[in-house]
Image (tube, rainbow, N blue to C red; front, side, top):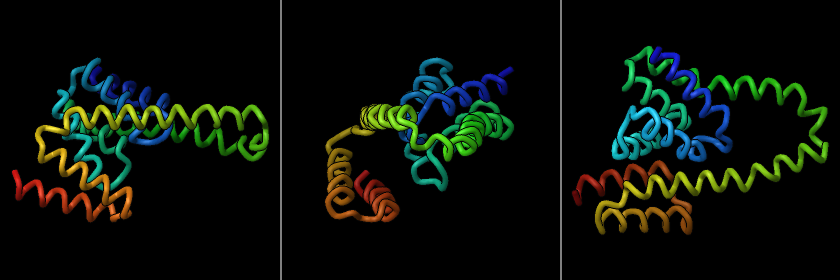
Length: 172
């Protein structure tokens, strides 16, 4: 029963979340922390951080993590399959019909409506992650430094992540 619940929960997340992993974060948080209580808020924030620095899409990494925590390797398989299955089905359908309808005004208007919704979901995820991430003034300084280096100077995200981890080890 738990495997089916994992699959269906992440299937729903994959089906109704647009815009990639970061846009999915608020829905993942709602489901795994609030609804099912599979992880706590602090562990969720840590899970987001680990999912960002490990290879692969954030949502898949998080599904794998939650599935493993709930029911070991088989749980991670079911959760991961749940989150990717809707995308596979939708992409197969869209690929089949997109060429035929790509210039349709209703399709174009639909995509225009999805864009701001996706930005809103990403912003909500950023606020959610920020809420548990700022524990003291040091964490705020790391954030400000990372933001400036990323936004203004376009520093490589991998280099920034490794550097922030090293700084964290040193100052904490």
